[in-house]
Length: 231
Length: 231
Image (cartoon, rainbow over all chains, first blue to last red; front, side, top):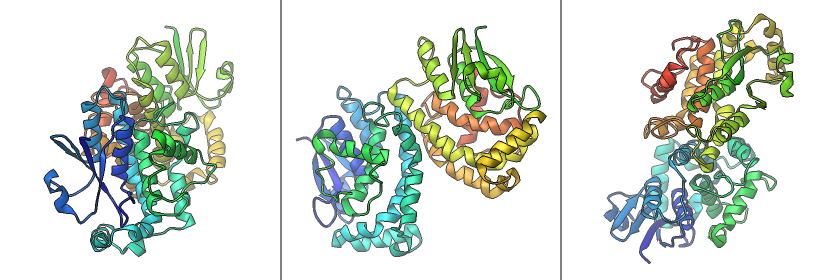
């Protein structure tokens, strides 16, 4: 196998929660590609020093090393152009780019408030001090002050997801009849939550729940078979 | 000329502010089509009764009558398939659909708070009672209570537009090197504001301001030449 993906892991090797890594993993499956998924922890900077930076995902494809989830996916689209397209054209690639920022700025912060304490519990012991220090500096408060895993935050999440729900009233995926990369972008933070938290983010009668079920089942249940809570 | 578009107008015939109508008008220009733009007021229900409903835009193309901005644009894409595409494929059509709901649920309500009182002043006298009654019922408060044309609301708008700004850091249009229908979707509420309000929504050094300028200039200045305030 030529493809290697450095993938964030928790205390357990099979607890894989990083949303950008999930974006890339679903994109690889969409392309029909298998990669060796190498567990990596926040503090293992030396293990990916060859990439010139300190974050995952890092994709190694033979002699090529690519970092940043968006750049990795663009690389896959070009390098494997004869495999199923993740975008289908420049305008839909742009639509996915918008979705990426919508997700990061609107959805991810709310899910973080819900799952943060569960996420912290699942980290490898050697990562906990690094995680607490870096995140508390970024957030400007303690993890415990930021976390609000309550009904109000879950309601806020369901409200914020409303534009996605409207699209899913009309079609099964953001991509139409089949998923494209924008689907994986929004699916990724749900996998982040699923890997570490038993809290139910979506009502079972929500169209977004059914959409997530379909993506859990995609590629022979690739995402469903990953370590996680059944929510 | 075969195409007719019923287009919402204010007290002055050339004050055209409806965002869904602006979406359709920019889509028509993108397709290289000219339509007769017929001014219409909220209370002129009988004038569009032939369409089976009471809202604009209504497009008449020979024997075809199409209502709802999204359906009109889908019609144009199909009926004028040999003209420049508004989408470029199903995935990017889906991206535009998401953008439509993001815009309606996130951007439009904030702009409404900023421009509502200016908008009301620009309505035709015969529409004012209808507008006040229907909107106050919908909003659950008076127009004056809902409107907050202050710095805090403008700041909230600029923050809410952040995912768009991130895309425009990387490319000149949502569509990439050239606009597609999603660009017109987000442009439309700016035309709504421009037609009725002198309030400056965007800072001049904002990438979104420059993007709006490009769209004002598109199609020989079609949107810039429309009645409106220079903001």
